[in-house]
Image 1 (cartoon, rainbow, N blue to C red):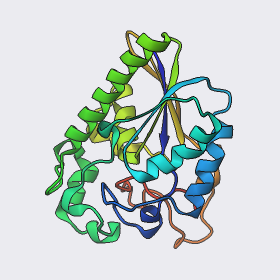
Image 2: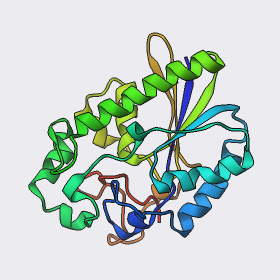
Image 3: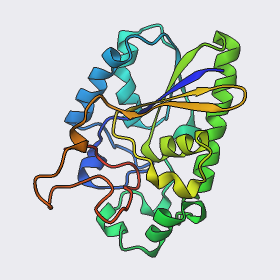
Length: 235
């Protein structure tokens, strides 16, 4: 079956503001996110992509635009099923404010039971995203053959959920996975099992360096909490 290249959108204005964007309109790439997107065509230059599928949200479309400009014949499709988790009443709120909500402990420790008020559950998010991947795998293989490679541009929690499914991990463990903005994750699907070939690859190891001070931010926090929505990446 096909090989899927999952790209998280570049760093957004919501990422740097510490806001949980969800489906909030008007969230765009910031200056660094724009530079990350501009570098994407060169990073993917060796891959003969059969198609690109994007979340309908602006930050994903902006991330793919340089790639589309570099490959004018690349077919582009939009699929709401790989759009960001619908965080409902949490959308547009500061992550530091949401940290005090009782639901956040469930999101961190038992996400399979987490449902956002006015939004969707994390199980629903994973199910729709995995369904989308399976449907596109079948379509791409039928149209381009089993060796085809295609790309999806999506969001942090969506990509983590798809990776968890590929690894046979329960959704309750998916907060152990982290993907940086504009990182590349690759999964090769076969008849019997998927193979995770790359995870959150940016080619940049800055996020692994030791902190110079205890006050310097670190993805995930010292207490082991995961950044809902994916975080802003390395400073």
